[in-house]
Length: 379
Image (cartoon, rainbow, N blue to C red; front, top):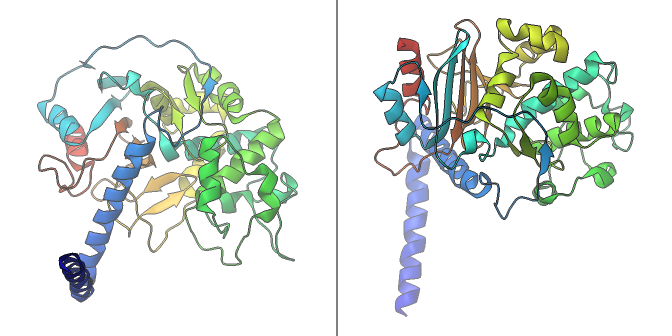
């Protein structure tokens, strides 16, 4: 009887809480919802960020070059504010690069210079770069090509098309099966089930991991190689990056690489890095990646902490309040590669998102990167 009473009281509190929430101002409700989304990202990241996570399969090696070993802090000048930010933000790897030199670099003992941290969705940007390389090489004719030119098994309604660009910008209308997409983290591609994919006629922006999984299938089909080898040959070897690991079967997630490897990829977006781009991917494609954007009405982004005011294209984000010069690439847990071409700044940040209830966390800041960018701007 007592258990029944407490159950009844619990239901009553829940119903009351829902009604109170519904009576709140829309702006307050949105802030609460965004906070809960951030907390969910923090929790999920904890399950996926470690290489030995039970949710992930075995990894495929990306062969590379040896980097010099770094111990503790390496920087031109120590800034106490940055060190405090590292602690309150659960950062495990931080690298700040400006005007041709590394100003600040630090790692936690467990991070292996960033290589022990899952880059999560930052892989999507690598996929987009590889699509550009394939276009430069003539293996893909155009971003407007129907994907059925490369994956003829894709089944669409009569008269409909599905372009490479639709996949890059999450406008495919695909109906994602979360159980199927989870299987790709455990080593199984969805290639055999391509014909069963369902695409709605509504092609509004909707962020789906399956879009980039399909793009990875396009790449492996045209190159006849696993994703890890394509990345190794087209990016890692030409840029002389340190070895990494990836789950070949995903294509939207799960690359473990050093912070300096992410820095080198960020340099392709700076003017001073364009000499590398001419050997790897055309300047035209890089410019296209930066300008071909979508402006969803509602799209939650970790770096801004908001659902509104964000833009997206080819897994490049824009819309950081107070810092219009920055664009960035992010993965769950705020794995982030921030780039400011005008100021010639690149910031690599890898780690987790602190729990909202921790008094020393940065969750109460305007956005999670606010204090860091303020210090960088002042320096």
